[in-house]
Length: 319
Length: 276
Image (cartoon, rainbow over the protein chains, first blue to last red):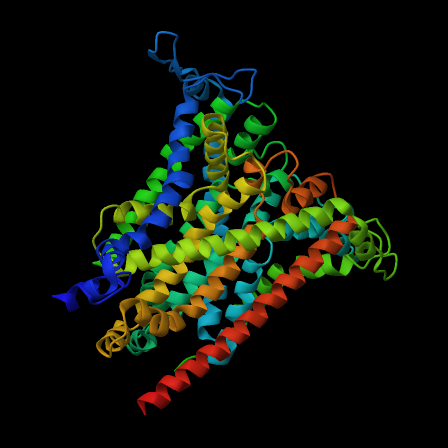
């Protein structure tokens, strides 16, 4: 029996609790909670509970004070708790069309940039998977390295290429292909380029992982049975690499949809992604309750479905 | 076996890699441009690097960012490792689903939402209990929260693949469970610990959105200073700073990767020797 309980937890310090006194017994009985409690409590207080506060404040009204919102709960002089919920912020989200427009625009931008990443990343991952073993290791490193370097600085670096007097325009002008600089900065194209540039490694890595494991004899079998290479690709490789396509697309789509830095630095005034609207609501308009309501709505409408989808996909993989 | 790549695939791969690296290469090249105008090459100069050393705003922001990154990645390493052990080793406990959810949620949560909600928490806490005032403390707490997620995921997968029978053998030979973990399992998961600490460090060093929300009026991290400068247009001293960060982080990652790989090979050789 003692052996069994030992195997259950590594925190249970002491095989013979009696020998180590009462402290040992206490640790043996509750030892696993010494391991579970710190991360559980920390994340509960500093990650989950904040959403409760956001929910509360989304029902408050903006006010000229510090912090800039009215009390939702208040205790009056006769010690009664008063609850003043205001649905005005949520009504405002429905009436001011900038929110609906930016939600839809964020989804569209994230969708098309994910598609672009897939179209560029798939052949790259495919080529990597077919390279020699030694080359594969080096290519992996080459693809991963940008992910470690600063995201903000990479977006800034891209600006150096695509701005009006940047490298791209200078080169095209010098070659005589164009007569006037192309306007890429502050356009939708710049936002797409920024997202693809930043998140391409996220697409390539899961694709490479599935393509690399792909059983090549299946392709040989298809060829033996008379498939042309592109038919074999369509009927064998593509369906089998579906898990990689889905994983890579999620890894690009999810951060892209809430993106702030890329539309703010590279996009123009029309590129109203929801992250940018939220930022301005907060820092420019100082309307915290509306910002809180936008966050809650965003969470329910976009992050919720994604999280549920991920949850069931993980379940499926486990079974 | 058909391992040949078509010219099309090879060119896409090369173009893609060029696309990933060209902007950074151009940035580094321009950091040595004597001219302040981005479009003109005014000759080689290291003037922007010297200017950087005298820029107090950038230096103090860099110092703050490095302190925050060191504290946050260490905190996240401890919490994330504990969470990974809890999730892998304890299959049933109250709150397991909650912990698993909270560990994975930051990975899919848009930073801007995490930032806003955490700010609202800090502001409310300050009102209720008088702590924490916005500044380095709140930035570190916020960074620990999202870095913990990355540490847990990395350590979790390593821990899952670790062979538990080795630990059980150690316990059969008289080691306490804690001893067995420290002597047997810890060396196995050490590479995951090192790489997740490094990952947390770079993520914290790079974070702009969450820091912008939870920081106070006098605590600007390096990305916040960079962002406010970049927003106004190209500034040559930021080119120099960016080049330093990109090459510095790149070199650290390459060295760490090399060291970890060698250590791993050495360990595998030892295991083979012991087995043989």
